[in-house]
Length: 403
Length: 157
Image 1 (spheres, chains in turn green, yellow):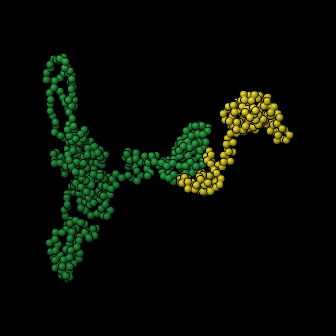
Image 2: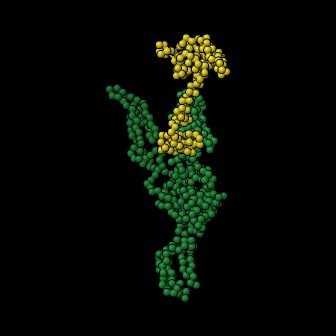
């Protein structure tokens, strides 16, 4: 077999093709080129980088040349995307997830190096280091302040570095990028052209007022010339730009027209294990999710969870059997009763036998009303005891969390 | 009629099995039986008509009035004095030992009891002697209204 000839044939074929995912392979015996889809090969061996190569070496053995030089973008290049990018080379920033520095080691090492060589600054209560390459990198201690800044203003362009845990977070913005005006990464405050104007009026009887955008200046005083059968009426003028255009809104930030996009960062080309390949995506999936022990619930989450066990508006009426009857809870919820005493010494009792909880009315006099409830877990049993009553309601109310 | 039991306790009774099973949906029971006996829910228990009547009787027998209430009402309704009452008791037979005990107990009750229960034998003895019906005695002990002890038209005629 003439390997040299075959390799030459192979090279000729590949160099003539612009199809990055199609590979020409020389047949050693026939000498004809055969095209094979590169992405049909094992992606653990060959990534879909269009610069990767596969061919025959000088001994006729198959070889893989994984592209080693250069990247698509410089590390941490921000990218707007109108769709979710299922690619480990891009990390989504607006989920505010902690990213693993062991996995994205190139990015972490770069941020760590920049941080170590940066100079400390403070703006808006946030302390960070501005680096020679214009990164704004904050320590993990600034995370809450940065989160608050983003929640209130829509922009918090800071990388966050957690050195003890070797992880990082990416900057976020709800607004677009603008050209350089002072320092890269700095906020640009909203502004609008001012609207000014003036009008003249005659002050009548010495009374006037002005506030807000209006002022009044004194341009001379004339004697009050009342009489003549005509009434003098004091008038106030008002100015409200929102009456002309809904663009003007109270307390609204200045906002130009735009299109909402995901914000991604390019985090490099590198070797990854199967587990590492999904680390960034998993971090995004788990972001804002409740821990198994529910220890990371915020105030809204705690309120929601605590409400799940409370009575809902859904209920079923039950038939009250003999005193001593046992009922099984159809779901998590509450057994409730209302009754009227038929004689003195009437009473009603609900006992959750398996949980040890009991509710009992005090002895009631004739005609007196009695009511009560007991919370129960699904399938647990409650025994009902009573004496000398007329029952007007015995129901099971489903807990708010039950369907 | 069909009854549902949890062990020995009758917990629910309905005319049809379907109705019973429907209402047993969330109740614990061990058996369903068909029976010719009519059961009704009475104060938390499923009882027969006879058992309910017995319970009602026991309940009424536990009604009581003070001796002042009873003597006053008899005086107003029948012009019966305490001496008259004692004379009635004195006429009770005492041939057997049981009769002697009953008579002595009646005298003790008449002279010593602070309250008279509807179910006490002395009340029935006096009622029978004066021709007062059992129903009217019940009503008197329920209401403390002496008019229930007044002679009926039949008695007056």
